[in-house]
Image (cartoon, rainbow, N blue to C red):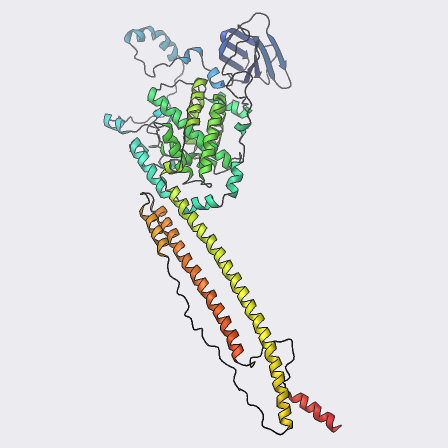
Length: 600
């Protein structure tokens, strides 16, 4: 028999069933309605549902069949008008037989009396043909020590020995080398050490100060923020499932889970951890999954990557916050806060919204070669289990998550020390840039004033030289001796004041050393970067003093040049707007022209 595609909805008086049965005869429909049981048969389709409420067959039923679409629509009246049927979107739980809702033991003890009573059934089964060509393996009995040594993991810590058969895919799925022989405490210690080594202070500071792209990602609104409250049930959101989602729900095998109190508590916490990783991935890709999506979800979730079993909600937030700042593309603390808000919104929207997120994760992992193992370990069981939990538990978890808080200092990655050191260096750079600009402006104004004074002095000197030239011409006419002048221009003298030597500021060096000594023990890379930032401040201060000393030297040189020009008595050739009559240029070509003109 084929289980047809179906969908259920309701109004205050009727339960509406839409069953897709293409290529069937319209005259061969069989219906069975009795309380919470509903059965439908149309060869080769068969559908059996266990409903969350009671329906009746009293003549008010309505049925319609669309031949072109192959869609059979049936309206069945409710036994109690106005009753709300909860969980009509949980298709997997609706397909379960009525008796399977109670958890049964997985192993039963069959007595001899029971065996004698079932002899007749066994004889009838023996009449069927038996396939002798079955695959056989030599049985190897595991000792009690070996069974106890295997560690539990997976949904509800119910799986073991899975990765012993998948050694090739081990490194592509999880980060633990030996999950079968690693205890929960050893997994946590290994995870913390790996995160400390993976943390990059340079990457974190780069995303902190250059966050234009991250701010754009933070403004993105995922699909769950656009949900409207459900009109059918208070506290739930109107979530619509695609045809692929419904098809996947029908493929799931419904089963019951025997979880004790500790296992149920860990299952809820691991669900929050997985939803946090999913929320980050959806926001970082703006709702469009990429080839990196399976890696991102798996890497950010300690449950999926390290088979972590959490004992409190604060441990979940700490693990997720550390992993966001160590592994993905956007390593910003604001992304952690946004993921927590998104997960709270998902839980507040009800278990239907949670189920849709889990189905999306299942699809992402299903399309990735090594990550499909995580579906078998966690996601498939979560998709089945979440359909059976009570909605008030999901709402209570959302309220607890909304009240939880996470700060940077809780992550133990020295984030505040890094930000303080980087901010101090940035302030020093801005202060140094402003000081250098002011020094450049002052030196420029000094040079312009010295040049203007030099030009005025040169004009005065040119007037004096003109007067001296006239005096020399009068004395030569009287036949007296000419005045003597210096043949070589004066040399520039070095400034009398010694140039200042840049000194390292002792207070800055002391504060940098104090910061490096008082940092709490963490990653070596963070401490080294903080020390480098402190040394950078010292070197920048020295450079700024050196630049100021150089500007002082240039100003002193300009003043010396102007003073030497005044002492030389106008012998330096400087541009002047007035003509100097003593400046005579004698060229050979001009003499030849004069001689030619005289001859002619």
